[in-house]
Image (cartoon, rainbow, N blue to C red):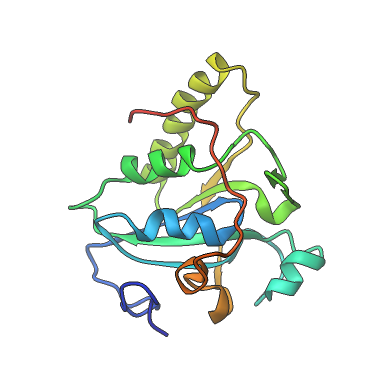
Length: 184
């Protein structure tokens, strides 16, 4: 399967110098669009991660107790775009204080997560969380509920979910940020 927008293959065969990070910030359709538009991002795909069920389907994640999150896997070239640039987009594209929801989308699958492949990326993500939490506190938001952890197994979502908003430009996606920006 190829990426609908940039035609790169959606698989694990990306250049060795590239890095990977996984974000959950609500409806994965809108979150994916935020990242596929960035220079230096090789590929994005949507999937499920962080739960207990092997090979979950969309229906499993929505209607059963899988504990999976709707996530976006981002493969990027760190010589063109930095982790801090991706973290800025992540923090600003959703409200990380909402717990098990984003806007009108409710459930554990919409919780805020960052899954990293290295401890260094976890540390940098946690540092950015502290910075953004102070910014949100000044704007009268509550505490950030984002989970930051080593990447669990990632399950690619069904093909019709991949780059959904490119295929369906009028599709609904309820992600929205707080209006607070972060400099990293």
